[in-house]
Image (cartoon, rainbow, N blue to C red; front, side, top):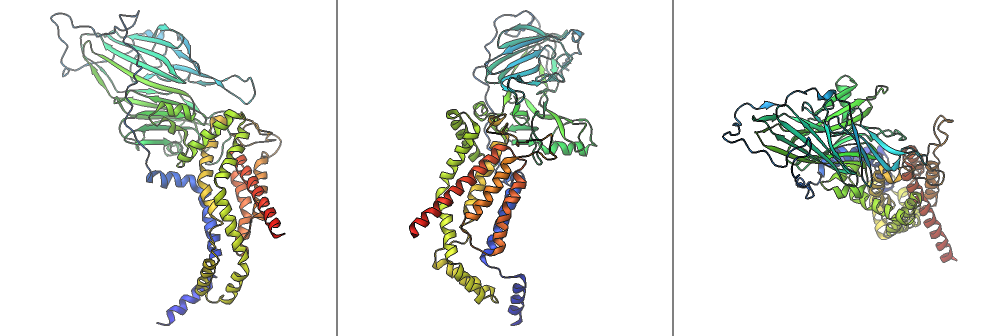
Amino acid sequence: MAAAPAALSRRTTKRGPMNLDRKDWIILGVLFLLLISWQMIDRTVLAPMFPEDTEPAREVAADRAAPREGDEPGGIPAEPAEPAAGSSAPELESAPQPVPEPDGRSAAPERTVEISGEKFGLVLTSRGGGIREAVLPEYRSTPEEGSGPVRLNFADHPALVYEGLSGLGEDGSLEIVDASGDAVKFAHRWDSGLVFERTVEIVGDYQLSVIDRFVNRGDEAIELPERALRTGGMSNPPHVSSMRGMVYLSVDAYSSANGVKRWDRKISKWFKKEGHPLELVRQPEDWAGPVDWVAAKNKFFVQILNPEADTTRGMRIEARRDPESADDTVDRLAVAARFDPVVLSAGEPLELEHRYYVGPKKLKILQDLGAHQDRVMELGWFRFIGRPLLKVLNGIHAVLPNYGVAIILLTMLVRIIFWPVTHKSTESMKRMQKIQPLMKEIREKHKDNPQKMQQELMALYKEHKVNPMGGCLPMLIQIPVFIALFWVLRSAIELRFASFLWVADLSEPENLFADALPIALNILPLVMAGTMFLQQKLTPTAGDPQQQKMMMFMPVMLLFILYPMPSGLVLYWTTSNLLMIVQLLWRRRKEAGEAA
């Protein structure tokens, strides 16, 4: 039995001395791996552990359009017609008539009408009563001043057009009954007596109310089949760099039963699985039941369709692949809400109100919409940190209208908040420095007995009130803040085309001399690596040489990681390093004065 401890001792000695400094080295390596793999951990581990908050489906808005009085030319009566004397509505058990095929009116030329609100304008088309184009005057299309507003073009497949209803699709022709500054009314009649009326009205910042009213004016029951109402197609925004691991073009959906789900990387896998077609249509298998809202989005802009509650039966995703891409990169995405079939008896009306948002991914506006629609912004698992950080950033910008300055001031605020932790860490490292001779003596004395060495070192730490892990604490605490800022600064529309010093766009890498150099020059990541190296030189160190070499290699690794990242994020990290350097220099000067 005595051989077992000896064998164990031999194996332990063969591995090398397992002291706390080596553990520090291992923990730092683990922290670094977490830093570069947190996005995968968020999606695959944390998201299932912390399901989305849910809330009941929204009620129909109180400001629904008032009932119409009388008949409009080509419109629908406000109340259903009474059955003729001596007649009765047919029993629902009898086979209802389907919606008839188009009656030839689809050959009419397309007509368009424009409506506008305070924030945006729309071009609507008689083809299905859909939206052909959305114009956002507050956002310019390119970084150049005077380049014109952003235009979301849906001409190939207009938004808010029904699919599955003959005469109301993209080939159908609706009558434009009335148009005012912020509203338009469409109508369509079938020979069977079925009448359709649509009222589209701007009701808020980038938001529409779409009221669809069907009335069966015939003598027999008519069945409205399963149908779908789709968004317009969203494409990858121009002037956005492609960064490895970042997918900006996506489809989201929400319901109180399923929470928020996203299909970004999955769509490329569908193309691969189905043999790389140019286009595909898919009803996701990981979604069951109705939807409260569906969204199609790119990095900065989004369409959100919030259909009539309790009438949807599911969703459908439509995707187009970039034919010039070799890796199934998605070029265009749209999403549709599907509706249950419904039978309308003679004289019976059906009125549905849908809400539709088309505009920027801006937190304040999306929060005001309710129903968790602000979740299209993807602020990550640390959104409870990211949201206040974004609000503070915008608050600073309201006083000092430059987002580069706002990021610097936000970084200073974060540093002030973390000052007690950083100060405590520095003090811990200084105490570790003072006991280095004693630690070296213990290691030499017990180099053949790792267990005894460990016990003696622990006793030494306790005697001098030293926490060997104190130096890692600031990094550990700041990782959630860094991750939250990463999510905020990677897709905050506030930083789009925001300039600072030589940086033309804080939402993108600097990309200097991109046409002249094999790899575009980004100065901020180089400054970040240099300041991080200087910071580590000034920081009190304790531990073996291996740990110190590993720490000195950290700037190189972070340079590689942050080089293609948005300039705003790198500006935050660089400013944080500079502030830490100032803090360390101030500390050294204070200690020199005390010693004198």
